[in-house]
Length: 202
Ligand SMILES: *[C@@H]1O[C@H](CO)[C@@H](O)[C@H](O)[C@H]1NC(C)=O
Ligand SMILES: *[C@@H]1O[C@H](CO)[C@@H](O)[C@H](O)[C@H]1NC(C)=O
Image 1: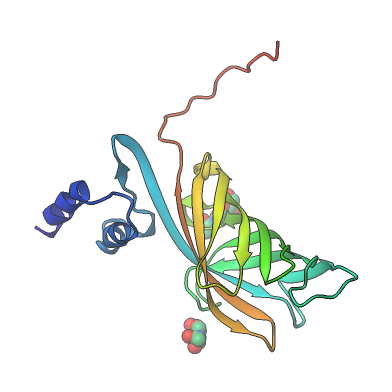
Image 2 (image 1 turned 90 degrees about the vertical axis):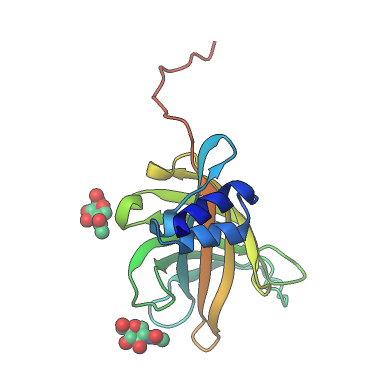
């Protein structure tokens, strides 16, 4: 009965609304990768959530400073850090490691704490083990929800396109430890792709 109601709602409501996605995910029919049919396209919206742990101080930092401007500023404009941050299934650092976030973040805003993020989410468990997502965009760290683009993927996530929403879960300035919740929303190719012959340049 609950399933029939859900199906009915599926066809009535705007298919990509956040609330509906949440309802479908909450129905428990398949966990965090539940998708939706969008119109007539057999394109699934995939939703993944995990927690990003960034430590910039202490004996074993996951993010290191590699360059900075000679000119000091409140927004640290010009600072470049390289990260290899663990991604876990829950906010607790001891929860299951699902992947790594590897890349750089650059303080690219002269006025506020605005970063350019360029990173690869590289997954190590389950069906996405060995697959990656490429994420790039502006991250104004003091705002509640930041959005960045998913520009591509590899493995099972080839042709991924979508966005991530980042929300700070906790920040401990004494040890420079930030936990950020990342929610990823993306589609991959609806096509059954066969590898073609090489194209000719001329
Ligand atoms: C994190 O998990 C560990 C091991 O399960 C537990 O001992 C610890 O209390 C948890 N920390 C928090 C903040 O929940
Ligand atoms: C992920 O894939 C690697 C390489 O194929 C394999 O060694 C590893 O055991 C896999 N991990 C899990 C949790 O399945």
